[in-house]
Image (tube, rainbow, N blue to C red; front, side):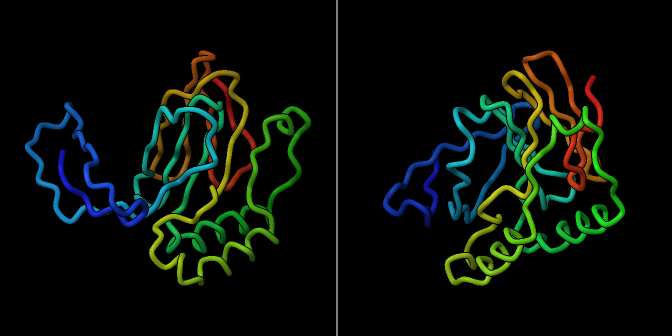
Length: 176
């Protein structure tokens, strides 16, 4: 247990940190601060959180069967431009894909997010306060996610399936 400056919940001093056993330590962590909570999106426990290779995206998954992708606010415009470029060239999904469509932010929501990022309160936040995208399609708890270097995501579930996603796409690309 180490003392951490908690800017989200002032007065709370003891937050437990545990380093992974697979990477031998010891680790010295300095100047750790609690600055943001990503809450009110997932229902139930979150079983897995993984950063993308670039460190600008965070995937969260859990009991609610939904994969959520969060973006660091400084990188929001980059990933929004990537999505827009793809959508400009995209044809509509096939009927079988429509049932597995994710929720990407709409143009109206995009404008609202950009305005919210300019507020004083948002200046101290690391991530955009709403998920960049959410993916549904699994029928049971999600247990693990894995990122590729070019933003493909694999999600595995207790339903014994693995699904392939890409952050620029709204649908599941493949189910194994």
